[in-house]
Length: 190
Image 1 (cartoon, one colour):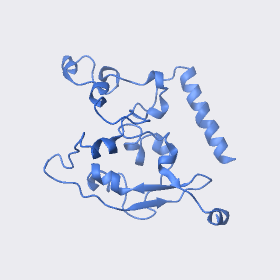
Image 2 (cartoon, rainbow, N blue to C red):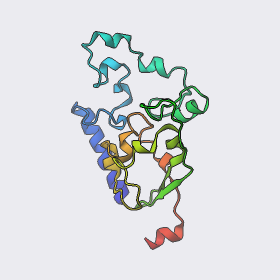
Image 3 (cartoon, one colour):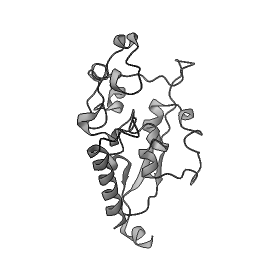
Image 4 (tube, rainbow, N blue to C red):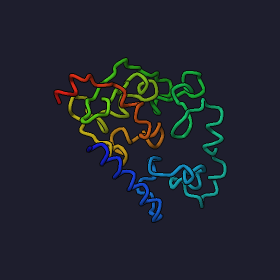
């Protein structure tokens, strides 16, 4: 029942924003932007100043992403496969470009309320691209139960939403995170 209500509220909010022409309150989260209205050039992204003449020398996203492995969501790039094929080489420390990643083979499972599967957070894929200091402690406290979060907050660019919805796949790809199914016995106890 609660899940249905939340889905309807989100749907109504999306329809209301589109129908009344309300400006997108979160330019960085593609979840709030209909596909036909998504920004495809730097001059229209709301970040770059279109009046600056130097903008013409920057590579446009479609051109930059063309040689990368195609994905089915977000900006249509599969960043992990692109990295594994050597098409991108993340710099882990801008002050020391020779610094190598320190992949951490740890998956944290976060329990969620309701009928959605629990969330699996794979440190491995994140630490191949990012240094730990990118997230800890400014975004996430490295302690169990120390990071209260909600889908609403994530959609507004908090916690996981700092990246997911802007540079990483969007939060509309629910099953990519909500992937740990609860046992019927455990679900009945809660």
